[in-house]
Image (cartoon, rainbow, N blue to C red; front, side, top):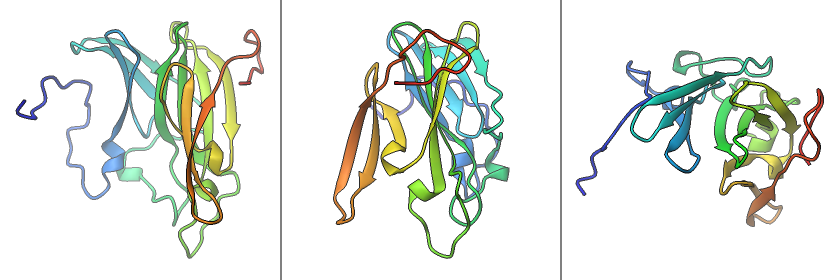
Length: 188
C-alpha cells in the first residue's frame, strides 16, 4: 500500500548506474507457480528464483553470437554496432525455457541518421532444456515484424511494426516445436 518493495533479490550490481542504466537492467520472466527467471541484459545467464527469494538454478549459455557486456562496455545501437540483449524468457508447460535475444543485424552499418530498429537488430529465439542446459532449438529472424518483444502466454509472443503510412501494429505469434530435437532443430 505504501509503494515500497516487499522483497528484493537477485540484483548483483551495486555500483552506480551512471548515464547508461541498461547495463544494469535485468529481464524478469514469471513462469507461473512460485518461480521467476531473471538475467542481466548483457549476459546470456538466466537464474531461476522462487518468489520467496531462494535461488534455485543458474543457466549460462555460451553462444558465439552473444558477446557479454556490462554498462561500462555498453554501445549505443545507432552510432556503433549494438550489444546483444537478453530480452525475455518463458518456461513452457514441459519445462523448456524459450529465450528471446536481440543481436546486431547481419547488415548493420553506421549511419548519420538514426535507423529503424529492424536495421539495427535481428532476433534470436532459442529453446533450452534447463535441466541439462542443452539447446533444443535455435532460429534467427530479421525484419521489423520479427523483432519479438515478450511472451504474453505459454506459447504466444508479440512483435511491433509500423507500416508505410505510420500505422502501428502489434503482431501476436504462436511458436511450437515441430519435430523431436536433433542437431539442427528449428521452430515451426
